[in-house]
Image (cartoon, rainbow over all chains, first blue to last red; front, top):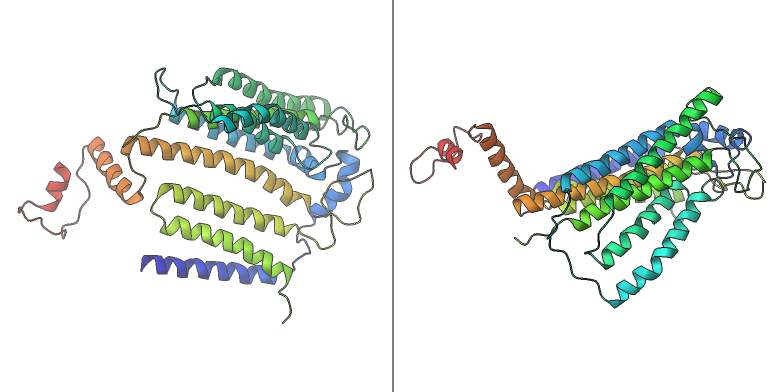
Length: 229
Length: 152
């Protein structure tokens, strides 16, 4: 009975939303700001990837807020799970296939992740996507060899430095350009690696922060001692 | 029969994902299933945001070789979704830490059992009796239901 009522409620909700959506003109974006940014950002920010100029240029303060959410989630996860005891039980080492794949994939994932972070202002990708790939690279050895020590302190240092670098670049923008997180260093030639001012630096900070934070959070989960009840 | 409009297909997919997510949250009794339902709901919401920036005959907002394309999709929803996905992953990981913690402490992930256990522990910590109705059925040994539950 309860399930049938829930089904009815969700079907009604979806129908209402669908009726509202059907009123909209599909394919014609209702917001004008996107069109304006598409026209203005190549001259103002100079990043070939316009999404990057939105994330780190026009909405950079929002991105800082999102990094704060990420930080809060990772910190709360670490606080909830704590550190494992020295004699904590852990899963046995993985089989040959996972061990070999982990050794093979670790450098590959590292290179791909850093490439995506560094080219965030030129091609689709950037600090968030590359950071998740970096996190996967650091988490993979822990999956293959569950007993190995994960250097939480070192990751925390990198994470703190990356977060601080983001804010420092923002403050430099405030001092030099008059606005917090204002792009610095000139636009450069569009499409070259050293272009779009301080945006690549910001994305490197974001990538390192996302990578170390997610890797630390996943390591906390993986190290948590299993219980049989 | 004419093929359905592209917009209708995509909106249906987005609302179906969100609807399945809401339905899962409402009717599941297992915490991991609820977490997975939240993931589905997020996916539907992200797809809906992406659709709001869609334009016909438009390319992704990336400039190749310095040529500004004639028409590009709206970059603002893309930037929103880009960050929302990563934030979603972090929040999902945090939800899983809470689930792990509950499993360790109470040994169950069924929300009905968890609710009873949590209420019992909260009442015990606060030094109060469990809330109960005057009209609750009297157990067979004759003691009032409230006193029995409070003392347990």
